[in-house]
Image 1 (cartoon, rainbow, N blue to C red):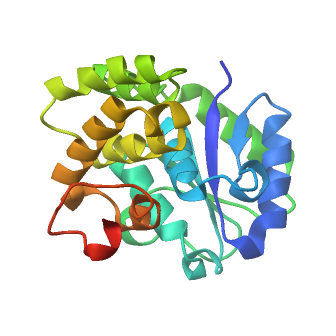
Image 2 (spheres, one colour; image 1 turned 180 degrees about the horizontal axis):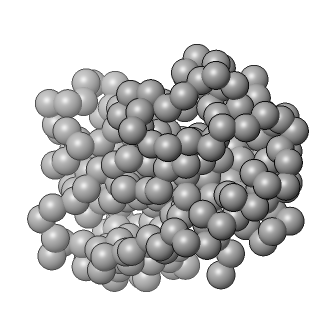
Length: 226
């Protein structure tokens, strides 16, 4: 199975990010690049969460533009919450900052030479694959369910769990994108209850997505969400 990489970058550096993706892809790595890989009309917030949750390595394409982006720091926060391996690639004098300031970055210039690409590839080979709990597997099956009945059956298994991480709640919210879940009365009701009871853990970035769905009364949501 190909190693999955999430490439976080400023929109200003998207040409450089595309170059890095192309070169890594030639070595058999699967690189997610938002501006290339999110289809028009897709719910991009939940897609970003899903890709970060499922990646093996989270690359920060660090430049002076990175902190100026609206979402890069939030993407880093999600990666930290999901305990992902974070690899800063420093293409100017910018260095890891904030909660990732202790991370050792790869300092280089662009265009990327073969030695830098080889170094990233070697890191990907020695990085352990992400581990998934039984709950993670249930949520993954729910997201990919193919019928109302299947969605209801899988969702019912969630009721045995009392504790959900922020990453798992994010995955549950992304399940709304599947019509077999969203239009399954049973599955939707179970997800609504779980998410409604744990809104204090749900990242605010998801509010734009949550407003499209009914969530049970909760003090964290105003009237616009009902």
